[in-house]
Length: 438
Image (cartoon, rainbow, N blue to C red):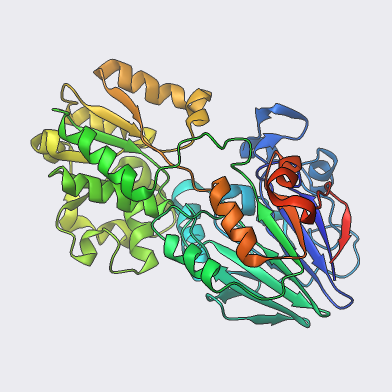
């Protein structure tokens, strides 16, 4: 059994790994690169790929050159399977180019989130003839290769790591994970009961080189947000990913602590509903301190997809501009540019605050200009309230010690050479496209 990192050996995002045996070839993840391969100083925009052929995208360095993976090429037989670890664009963003006759393996929660994202955000996952839904620690057989998924703590709900077993060897692909989120019990479970006799550990290192970055737990973040909310006399707005379920729970709990009502949009409410967990904060689960803001933008998208039931089911929990006005300082509202008109109709009270709960560099992009102008118009204070979705160094060390592999291969990191300092002689740094015999 051998492996190739087609992309991700020296960068965060755009991950693609191939694991091959004498009988089967399996791809893990096929993500959109965060940076444009032609100019690493620029972010890659998905709309810039429109109209490009697969040979074009391979030539541009956007699609990794993997035989048997894409449509319309005169390749040998298709790869046997593609695994998806979690629903973040830097891991699934190039899936629309995958041949539809290749089976795709993914978690049930990941599948639900991707379906909602396509409807609300236009994020395409592609057409696939066969999707196999994975369950935590239940192995599946792919042409003689055993694949066991492990749920992990990450900012993407339902994120999975994979244990690949074949030809007497074991490779563990960590995917993206952390140990300080609301699902940290999954991390501790993996530490306490790791797979045995792992030959190769492919371990993410997003936070390598950023060891000093703030890494509060979600519980600590909740308390900080609640404390700040209590001293603000105006509306509380927040920006976070609608797919970051841990963070949405954090904002709900902070809202409750500060005596406010959480106001979600249709996208976020439907993701929480579709996941089908009674503990998640939506009105259909009995959370009376949660309301749903209907916006023209999302209602139009749902009508286009003939999915009006995705807003009709929230009618009895709807809040409009007048309702927001009545709530005033008791409103704790998720913000999107597409909801700007509805928010401004409600009137923004003095001493309002915007909690920003995403990677800070996103605020430097032109797409944030409209949000910044909105805050300036209404004198809204800007407060960063975030913690990483990735493992800090101490968690990486605990993880590597528990796994006790023969070899550690860095992936999803800009600092692969730093691994040797922390993990010793077991580390083997690869380059993209380099084959490693496991």
